[in-house]
Amino acid sequence: MKRAFFIIAAAISLQLISCTGGEKFTDLLVNNSGSDKSGNPTSGNGAYPTIISPLPGAQLENLKAEFKEMNPNFPGTLNKYGFIEDEVKSMEHPDTILTDENLMIQRAKAFLLKNSKFTGVTDTTAMSIFNSLPFIRGKLWMVIFNNQIYNGLEVKRSVIHVYLDANGVFRASGNWYNYIFIPDEQISEEDAKNSIIGFEIEYQLGWGGGSGIYVVNERDMINPAVKIVLVQFSGEKIELKVAWQISVRSAGWYVFVDTVTGEVLGTEQLWAD
Image 1: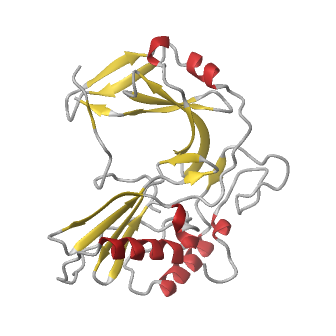
Image 2: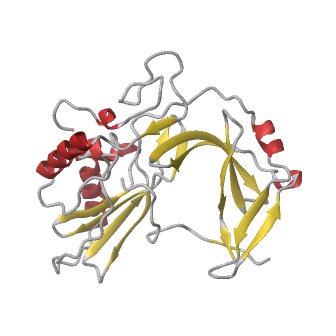
Image 3: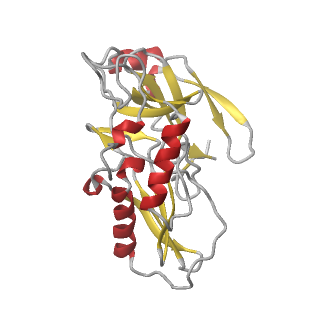
């Protein structure tokens, strides 16, 4: 099978469309039993997984009003979790050609930090750049930030995109998380690998090329597994789970296994025919 590894870039459609006053960003989070609405555990080791629920209507409307007051020229609003909504709006942009990449990155970071209550970004020095480039004949600029690192663990699916024109930021998508409970490991790396021997991975054969099934065997898992945080949706809730990211067949796929429950949380295909 001929393989070509591909990089997820500007065309990604993110699942999540990600301070002033006395209210902290953590007030946006709603965790499950065992923790308060800030997401911080009330006692013991906290609740697992960390859960973020849609905000009550009145609270969300107040936050939207606050966000608009802070960003009167920004055309977007907040989503139901209180993060910045990714909205593509028809609008006129200045004809100014953008050439200063450092300035664009600085403006993108400043916007995220100013709106930390709605982006989860509290320290831009921790942000690394995945890509930064002009488009639409140089009138617009896009900055893509890599996934969040929380307590040394990569948070999968937390890429942030920021779009700018000569007037500043006009669109943003993605967010980081202010609090994630990291539980003690219950499932070892070895146990996680053993649990997926015989696991069937359904894969796609290029664009419109059908699908196939690959059965995992022990020889496929020669690389060390990496512990990560995986962002998942369960109904309307966001769940933040800690998982072993197991590389299968020389990183042809990742299989994610929950470090607490041993559940297979999903797979990620890293190649295309």
